[in-house]
Image (cartoon, rainbow, N blue to C red; front, side, top):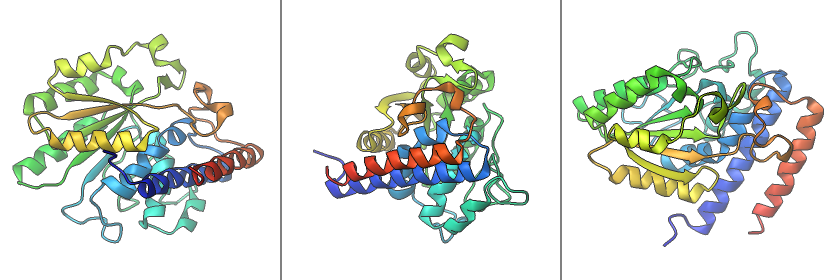
Length: 284
């Protein structure tokens, strides 16, 4: 039985397409920022903000909201556009991205924008922060869930594995980590720079429930989230296979686009490509 209705699947696919277009426009306008990761995570962010998360955009500090920790803060453009689309702030504010004094900085700053749970940028810190929140929720008998989005490259940080060990020891079943397994980082491919595999076996060795999914199949991702909710004795990590730059064929899987923004001319070409994809989605 399908987890999502055809209507929901189409709605989320179209939303992911919209998010990609907004990211491209925002980066081209700013002339700087990270492109590859945000485009690769658009499907997951569409699922999170428009189906999975228990949250109230009109009340960002609502006590019972789910917490979303963005450990890989450099992909925050996709979070900004998802938050704007969800109603956290006006879409027009996206035009201020990376401007002096803007709430929308190149890496997220918690005190600037309600709806951001943490300030991030330096990799390898988010999982520890998420663990503290999840442990606090358990101590306070709160039912909200904590989600931590992580890059695969930050698994080269020792602090990440200290956090993995601690969460396994504490059996934090209210914690779900999502690893953006796009196999690239700023200077090349992860398996060339510092191999991570067998990543699944490592998490399992530290007491985690491990799920593998296609990060561009929204239905499968949502099914993984539901499976994570059923686990009551372990934290869950969803290792989501993604393609950096997804949706723009010319840059898909190209690590050189990790931290580079498109020119206005490139942005125009890319958006036209996404518009064609959008038309196809609507006919499925």
